[in-house]
Image (cartoon, rainbow, N blue to C red):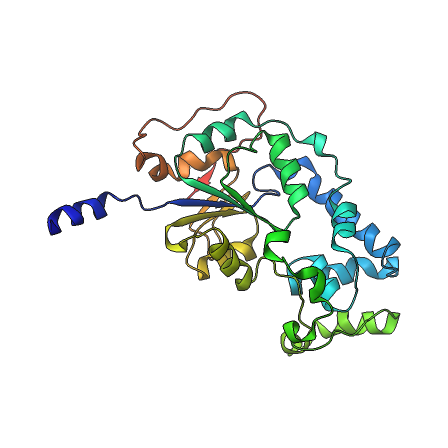
Length: 294
């Protein structure tokens, strides 16, 4: 009996879950959607929040580096706005028609009898639209997104106990510049106000994702285009794949120039499930790169 249990354990696949980011991971950056998102965030900060246009670019850069997303940073420094209004302005106006059905990726995903879960900082409406445009809406078991990571976020801005202290409202030019200058100080991390928003690349977002989707990080492969997200994922025990890059960076187990190269770099996934066929050959004008670093 002990021998049989040992054999069963040795035959157990190494991975039982694939965890995917969405934007610039399931589709290539050449779509231009990321640039459109950046433009919409800029417009929202100027038109809806009232930040001086001359300061938006630098401020947005500081907030993104400090808080993972612009939204998380804006909430942290005291701007109180409706989440749905923000997402509607930033994502709701995107030219989704640029995304086309991806039959190659769909075939790859469906050829693997392994759980597949989405893990995105974006709102559920955006994720749903992207998956629908790509023809991948039925390829994933579940979606972890802004709403699932932040179920109580609508109240969090007014709940000081949850974020350590009440959040002041920084609205004047001098106070905004103080926040920007603060980022360059050696103790900036310890004095920057906390955000009520849970998001990648921070560990609490990964912990929530593992809990929500019942994920064992040691048996999960994580695909993301962000180096920061990949590095945190590696620290959390995930096997990591950096998408959109030709070379591995610290924290990445694999690097793929395109998500279409999954089978070339991670053939072990297919072999573990009884498929030892050659990697899929690609033809036509699909956004595919062939270089794989593993």
